[in-house]
Amino acid sequence: MPDNDPMNGEAWREIPDGEYDWRETLQPERPYIHDYSRTLTYKLYLAEPVSTLDASHVYMTFEDALETIRDIDAMTKGLPKIAYLVGWQYYGHDSKYPAWGEANEALKRPQDKTALDSLLWVMEEGFKYNTSVSLHINIQDAYKDSPLWDEYVREDLFAKNADGSIMEGGFWGCQQAYIVSYKREWDTGYLKRRIDNLCRMLPLQKAGTIHIDAMHCMADPGHGYSIEDVQKVRCQMVRYWRDLGIDVTSEFLYYETPDWRARQEHLVGLQPLAYHFSQNLEDYIARPASLICGGNSSKRFKEGISEKMGALFGESFDIESVRRGKDWKANFLRDFCRTDVRFFWLNRLERRYAVVDKKGINAYFGGGVVTSLDGSITKNGVPVQTGEYLALPAVYRGEGSYLLYGICAGEYEIDMSRAYGLPGDQAFDAAPLTTEGVGEEKRSMKLKDGILRVTLDEGQALIADVL
Image 1 (cartoon, helix red, strand yellow):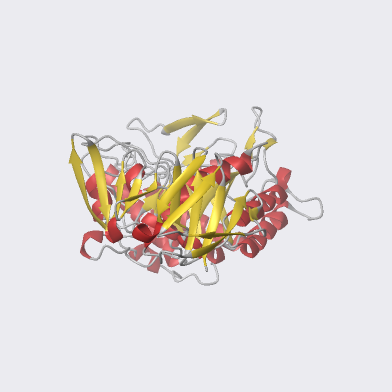
Image 2: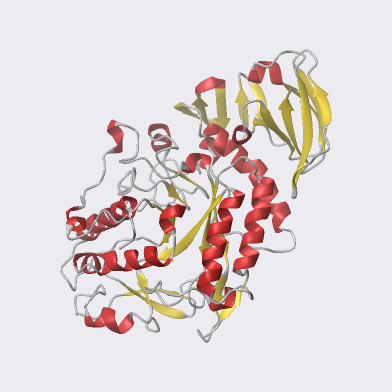
C-alpha cells in the first residue's frame, strides 16, 4: 500500500458512488489539494511511440523537462504551478496501457542508472521552481502489446459488446485501443491495485495531483453494466485518489447522456479542473472558479448559447501541452500575458450576473468589473483590456502589482485612479517582463491626475509595482 493509504482491508469498497451536490455549499466535496483557480497548470509533451511501436520519438527528455519548468517559473514568478508529464512511460504517449509500471528509457539522464531515477529526480527538482510535477495517465485504454494484456483477458477486465467480443476504443498512436471495464476492474480490486502500485513507484502523494486522460464512461453490455453503473465507479475511483491525497484533473466535464441534457456533469465538486472546458452561461454564474475551472473553453456538448464563455469569465491558455521549439518561450509569454493574467484575476472576483441582448453578452463581477465576448474588460467604467492593450492586476505577484501589455504598439492613457482606486500621483517601479523573467532594470512611472501614460511596443510586457 502507499504509506498513507487509508483504505487497508476492504474499506475502499464502501467509498460512496453517488454524485456530489455542489449547489448547497458551492464548495468541493472535500478541499482540493491545490487551488487550480490560482495555479498555472500545463502539460509537457515528452515522447510518443514510433510507428513500429518499439522505440520513442523524443521531444523532450526528463532533463529538458526540468529546464522547461525552470524557464516557465522564471516568466511566472509568484505563481504555484503544476506540470503533467505526457509520454513518461514505456515508449511514450499512450504506450502499453493499462500498464503504468515503467519509465521511458529514452528520456533518461546519462548520469542516472535508470529512467525511473531520472523521473524521480525531475519530480523532486520541480519543487525548487514552485512546480508540482506529476503524470498524464489513461485508465480506460488498453493495447495488445501491454505487459498486462494477457492478465486482463484472463481476469475478464475488458468491457465487452453484447456478443462477448472485447470493446474497441479509438485508434491511437498507430494502434487499436480497447476499453477497460471500470466496473469489473474496480469490483475485482485490480483498479485499486493499479493505482496503489503507481503510488508506490512514484511520489504522487507529494505532488498531490494527477491528470487522467479520456476518463469517459460507456455502457458495458457484455457484462450487463449500464452507463450509470460505470459512472458510479468513476465517482468512486476519483474519490479513492482523493483519499490518497491526490486530486484528479481530466480532459472534460463528462456528460455522456444521449440527448445532451443540460448540466449533467457527474464530477463537479470532485474534479477541480478540465483541460477542454465547456460550461453554459448559467453554469459560470452558479459555479465559482474554485469549484471547477479550466482552459481551452468551447461549446462542446452544451445546449443554448453557443459562444465560448471563456472570453467572459477567463480561462487558462491552451494547456493541452507545452512543446519546445524555436519560439516556444515567446509564444508562452504572449499567451500567459494575454490570457492567464486575466484568468487569475477574474477567478478572485465574485461572479454576479450576465446580460444577454442584441449587442452581445456582458458578465458583471464584483468590484465594478464588466467583461465582454470580444475579450475586453472595463473596471469602474475604465477600459483595462482592449484589443490594443491591457493594464490588469498581476494578482499572483501580490497586491499593488500590475501587468501592462501591448497587444498593438501605441501610446495609451489609462485612468488607473478611477479603475483601481490609486492616488492621483501614484508612483511605480516598472520592469520589463521577458522570456528570461522580470528584468533587473527598472524605470520610474507616475500617474498624473490619476492617468497613466505609457508607450508600449507590440508584445511588450511591463510589470509595474506601486511604490
